[in-house]
Structure formats: C-alpha cells, structure tokens
Image (cartoon, rainbow, N blue to C red; front, top):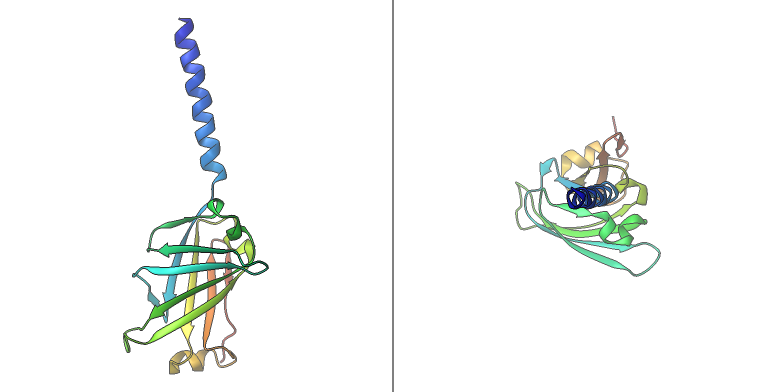
Amino acid sequence: MRTVKLSLNKIIVLLIFFISFTVYSQKINLIFFINDELLTSPLDLEFYNKTSNDKYDFIYSPGKEIDINANPILKEDMILKFDAYGDRENLTKRYSYNIPLEAGLLKDTLFLIIKLYNLDKKEYRKRYCKAKASYVVEFHKSGLNINAARCK
C-alpha cells in the first residue's frame, strides 16, 4: 500500500511539472499572405535583434509553430527578413522583405497573420497611395489588428 502511495505521489509531481512546462512555453503560428494569396511554400526566415547583432534562423513551413521561449531574441524588438518569389502574374520575380516586429506583437497569442502588399501592383498602389516603401505590412492576431493607412 505504501509503495502505491509513493508511486502515485511521483506521478502527480511529474504531471504537475509537465503541465507547468507546457503552460509557460509559448509557441506561435505565423501565417503569411502576400498580395492576398496565402503563402503555402517554405521560407527561410531570419529574425534580427534591433539592438544587438543576434540572429535567429528559422525554416518556415505553413502550420509549423515557432517556439518563442526557445530563443530569447524573439522576446525583444526585431526585424524579420526573408525573400519570397512571385505571384500569379510573375512567378520568377523576387521580393525581399524587412519587417519590423515589436516584442509585444508575439506575446499572448497563438497566431500572427502577416499580410504583405507589393506596391509594384497597380491595385495595391492605388489602395495604399500614402505608402513610401515598396510594400505595405499589416498584422492581425487575436484581439489586435494593425492596418496600413488606405486611400479613398
């Protein structure tokens, strides 16, 4: 009887440990749209810390989560850099993106939708006529939408 009670206590302690580990680890799913098309191909993502030269490389596959606790630079302000190729009209054109990410943008959410609009496309240039960059970024996560200014 005593060994059963000790075994039960060990199981309870291990269960509490695993539950606390999963509660405190935060993973986030990134979802990319480029020119209103869902990105379904893998990407080589580079996260750069804004204040130091620290870099975190990640191979993005749709549906694969990023473990924010696995790398401390993901908890700070950073720049997300990656290249993507083409769209329906031109599959070979290469676009390079440098997206500033605030540390709080990845906090307390299970997903982050990043919408990119290339302003070399007439329809997006008209929609975002106030933009000065070659592309516009919008962010969506649970409870927060950050949209670029649109023209009438």
